[in-house]
Length: 144
Image (tube, rainbow, N blue to C red; front, side, top):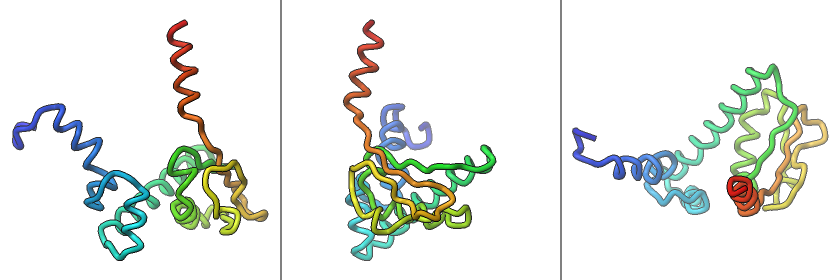
């Protein structure tokens, strides 16, 4: 901060809005935009997408080691519910663990569904969230 002469607020903005996949891709921090650009031969967008899928798969593998195996992978939230190719790419990096995604079952957005193949050692689910409901419930809990 001293070297660049920026404030704490400016640094927070850089870390929260201009780093990660947005920083790698040079695009807005919106996975829909980055994914579309990656199909248009935008090399930085391709690198950002691959970096993200690798990072998520790495965390899943690390947790599997820590827990001596896993039974389920659950995709939820905006990316997990809606980004078909991101789910596919993450799971493809985990085939060494017996993770087998069903390409046809995975070809959907925002519905609750099992997307693993029947022979997958790890079951893969997509489960939509209702973030607004959870925020309302937490707000009510705090108010009471």
